[in-house]
View 1: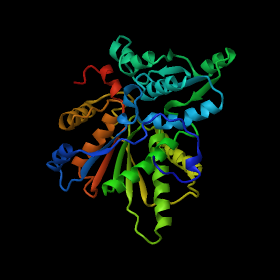
View 2: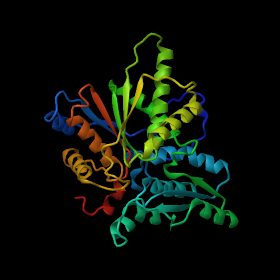
View 3: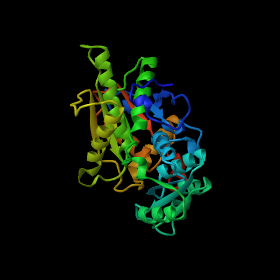
View 4: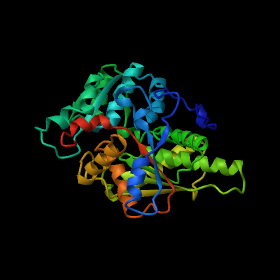
Length: 354
C-alpha cells in the first residue's frame, strides 16, 4: 500500500483497484525497433492501467478518479450516479462498473462526438456501449444533464452528477496524484528514473492529477534531502481531440493547481522539476476518430509486444511516442514511460482495425 502524506492520506476513498499497482514493465522489442530508426534511443517502458482492477474490461485510468468521487457520492447519500461522455467513452463504462460494485444505479448520457453514420452498427452498439448495457446502466441519447437530474430528483432517485471524465469534479485529479506516489515507489524498487512520461488526454484530470502528484513528490524529496539534485521529469500529454483555443491546456493547469491545494501542495510554483509538454499532432481531428497513424501505432505495439491499445486514447498516445522518437525529440531521454490508460474494450467498435 502506497504511503501518502497528510492531508492527502486523509481524503475518503472507496477501493476499486487491486491492493498493489500494476507492475511497470520494459518494452524491449519496441525499444530495439525504435533504436534502429533513431539514435540515440531511450529505453521504453509501460505502466498498464488496464490491469489495475478486476472490474469490467480490466480496469482503466478512470477508476482511480472514481475511487475518490464515489466516496463523496456515498457520503452525500446518493442513490444514482449520472455521467456523460462520447459513444465509446471509457469513463462511462468504468463508471457503470464502479456503480455496480457499490450498489448505485447508473445513468449514462451519451454524446456522439464524431460524424459516424447512423447505420454504423459496430460503433454505436459494440465495444464499450455493449458493456454499458451489460453492466446495468441506463443509456440515454440526446438528454441533457439538467433534464436527467431534474427527473431523477422528482422521482426520489437521489442523483449525483459526475462531469465527463470526472475532470472538472473537484476530486477528479486525486487518483493520478496518488499514482505519482506509486510511481516513485516502483522507481525505487527497480532503481530507475522515468525522465519522460507519455499519457493520452481528452478531459484533463489524468494529466492534471499526475502533474500535481509529481510536483508534490519533488517538493517532498527536496525537503527530505536539502541541497540534493532532484532529477527532472517531462510529462507529455498527447491530446486525443483538438484543443479549442487552448482550453484543455488551461483546464489541465487548473486541475493541477486545485488538486495540489487538496493534497498539501501550497503556492503557485514555479515547479521546474516537472515540465508539462502538450502534444497536439496525433488526435486525428476528433475524439474517437482513428486515422492511419493511430492504426499503425496500435498495430506496431500489438505485433512487437503483444499489447493492445485502443483508437480513442492509448493508440493516439502511442502514435505520439513513435512520432517523437522517430523525429529525434526523445534523444535526451533515457527512460520513457508509456502510461496505458486502458480502453481496449472499444476495439470491437472499430472493425477495420485488424
